[in-house]
Image (tube, rainbow, N blue to C red):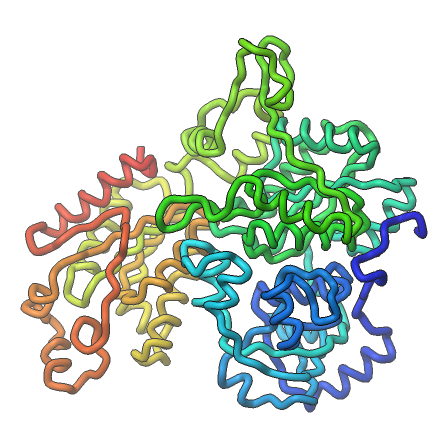
Amino acid sequence: MDHLIEPHGGVLCDLRVDENRAEELKEASLDYPSLTLTDRQLCDLELLLNGGFSPLTGFLGEEDYHGVLERCRLSDGTVWPMPITLDVAEDTAAGLEPGQPVALRDPEGFMLAVLHLEEAYRPDKEREAFAVFGTTDRHHPGVAYLLDRSGPVYLAGRVEGLQLPLHYDFTELRLTPAELRAEFAKRGWRRVVAFQTRNPMHRAHQELTLRAASEQEAGLLIHPVVGMTKPGDIDHYTRVRCYQALAEHYPDKMMTLALLPLAMRMGGPREALWHALIRKNYGCTHFIVGRDHAGPGQNGDGDDFYGPYDAQEKVADYEEELGIRMVPFKEMAYVEERAEYLPVDEVPEGATVKKLSGTEVRRRLREGLEIPEWFSYPNVVAELRRSHPPKHSQGLTIFFTGLSGSGKSTVANVLLARFREIGGRPVTLLDGDIVRQHLSSELGFSREHRNLNVRRIGFVASEITKNGGIAICAPIAPYRHVRQENRELIEAYGGFIEVHVKTPLEVCEARDRKGLYAKARAGQIREFTGIDDPYEEPIDPEVAIDTSDLTPMEAAQEVLLHLEKAGYLR
C-alpha cells in the first residue's frame, strides 16, 4: 500500500493493543475507576482507536487544546482544527487523579479502552464556542451541546484500546482506515475522491460525484456519517439503505460505500478541514467540499452561520500543507430539453431547469405525493417512503407543559378519549403524576431530578413515536432546554407538538385542588414551580391554550384542529 497517500502525521495511529496486553488491562481494571461514555464520546473514541483521528493518541491535554482553538494546530504545529476532549461532571473529576488509569465503558458496561489520565482542566466554554463555531448562539447545535450538555471538566491522556465500540448494523460497511486502505490497494486505486454526506443522495448528488471522480481520474468513496449528525436529520438506517439503492446506478467498480462513525459538530469551515483530514487518514487524495459544508442553518436572527464558500476557502488554505486536494462542489441542475443534469454554469441560455428543494421533497413524502424520476431513482424513493410514511400514519408525541393546576392533565385526558374514538393508532397518556408513581418514584423535586423525570418521559414517548403510536405527555416540565432535548430526540422518529397550557399563575393558584400552592406559600414545600422556582415558558410552541376561558373539551378541540391542519389527522 506504499502508493497510497500517507496518513495525517505520517503514521496511522491504531490504538488497539494485542491480546496479551488486553488481558493484562482487563485483569488490572478491577481496581480502575470507570467512566460510561456518551454517544458523542463513543464516536470520538472509535475514531481515536481505529486511526481515523491520526495523529492523536488520546484526548487532548490543555496545551494542545488551546493550540487547536487559537491556531487550528496541536502544540507541535500539526494541523488539527477540532478539539477532541473527554468531558465529565465535577463530581466525576473530583474522584480522579493524574497518573490513574480509567476504564472507558459503553452503556452496557463493556470496557472498550483505558485512559491513562494525565491531567484534568476546566475550559472556558464560551471561548471554545466562539473559537470553534464563530458564535455563542445556542441556535447552533454544536454550541448548544457544548454549553448546555457537556461536562465542565475535560480529562486528558493517552488511550489504549481493547476493542472498538460494538455495532450490529451494516457491519460489512464499517471499514476502519486500515481496512479501507487495503480495499483501495486491492482495486489499484491511487487517487480516491471522498464524498461526505449526512443526507439521502439523489440523482444530482450522483451526477456531481461521478463528474468529480472522472475529472480527477480517481475512484469514488461515498463516505456518509453514521454517528451523530444534526438533530432532526433522517436516521442513518434509512440513509444507508438509500445509499445502497443508489449504488446500483453507479458504473461497476467505480464507487465504494463505507460508513464513518463520526460525531459531527456542524462547525462549518473548521469541520470541513477536519473532514478532509479524516478522509486523508482513510486513504483519500481528494475531498469534495460543498456550499456551506457542515453548516447548521440559520442563527437566531435568521442569518446563515457561515458564508456559502467559507468552508471551501478554509480547506483551500491548508491543502498544500495537508496533501489532500479539495474538489469544489458543483451545483447541478436538471435540464429538461436535454434530459440530463449539468453544472449550473453550463446550462444553455433559455433552457428549462427543474428543481425540487429539500423542503418540497419532505412535503411530498409527508403527504404521499409523487417524487419525479428525474429527481431521484424509484428504489431510493421507496426506501424513504418505508421510513417516512405520510404524517397521518406517523408516530406522534403531544407534549403538554404548564404550571401545576393549569389544566394539562384534564385536557390530556380529553384528548386521549378523542383519539381512542378516532382509532387507527395506539395512544398512551404519560401524565406527570402517573409517571412519578410508576416510573420515577425514587426521584425528588430538585432541578436535577425534575430534568431526569422529564427525560424519562421523553425517552418513553420516543419509543412510542418510533413504533407508530401517539404519546400524550403532561408533565410541568419547567425548564426549556430539557423540553428541547425531548423534541430533538422524538423528531428523529415522528412528530412533536408542544402545547403550552399558559393558564396564569393566579388562576392556577386559585384552583389549587391539591393544596400545593398553599403549602408552598407557607414554606412547607421548597422549590415549587411558579412560587420559588422558575417556569421557563415555551418560546414558540405549536399550540398555546389558556384554560381560564376554555372548557377542557374546547381546549382539546384546539389541539385537534392544529393536528388536522398540520396533516397528522385525516
